[in-house]
Length: 449
Image (cartoon, rainbow, N blue to C red; front, top):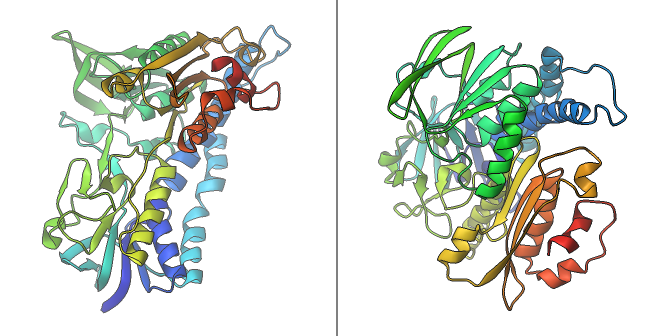
């Protein structure tokens, strides 16, 4: 059946949902398509379920840190029960999101989309024509080109494990590896991270990463850098992971091997060439309005777009709203990613907002670096957290906060304060004299600046 709409959205995650609901609220006819349960990565396979598991691991870790400081007794993670609890968040979500679309008047379609031409897609037996089409399909584990790659467990599969394997190897050293390894280690697994590069978490301040690596090692996680995985052989419960280290081969045994080596936009089977949509490994090529550079009827947002932004849920929501505005108003807005925070939910968390020292130097900026180990500060000592640091970059003369890099308790919430300061241009002196509640992490900012 052939149907026509003002806007056709592919993907029901945060970016696609924002476009669909905003355009529908403005009176446009809207269709939305997904080949998976409605809801996208964050609500079903990423942020939300992951943070539930992180929360349990934080309790275990805090209990262990506080032993001999007034806390005693046994405590452990019941993995099957934890996964069931996680399911109370994820299981109802697809129906809730689809009901929201239906109630708003957005027509929903289940199936994989494939472009037929510049303005239409095929979904099962339906053909959907759109004055505007939006690609918001998110990302998928990147192809690694190693032997036995099909033996790797995806991050979404990890979040649904009925039982946690005893020995786990993570291939790659990014967000997924550190977040999931910290969860698994607190749940009792023996964990190894194999990272091909010299530095894991390369987009974060490396002084803070070095301290996190020490903390990671202290909880029994074995992080190997300069270690390139070449093959994964065997069956669940009996895998052999072969890797090259300094031109020598080493074999690691594991019950499960997890793909943690990056994600790529899930575009391969959309047949974008039929629509004249240019793309590369980073996503659909877009201009500042998030409009395809080669097909003006098509926009892209979130992980599917080569926009230069971070792979973060707030950014996907922001880009979805921007795309909706540009469809409705005729390309009046361009993307502005100033003050976008990013956090690795390891234990403790590692946060970053704004520029690194290297980025500020490359721009020729003059700035001061305020940094300290804060493990002896009250905020860290009261929870016995030994890994707590900060590094703040402040422009000389103007007092602009150029970057904030944070490791320790509640680093995520502190990153939010710095993100607001950078985006709203709140200068260091003003932030230094803010009257924050004490004792909180925010009240430490006066000493950081």
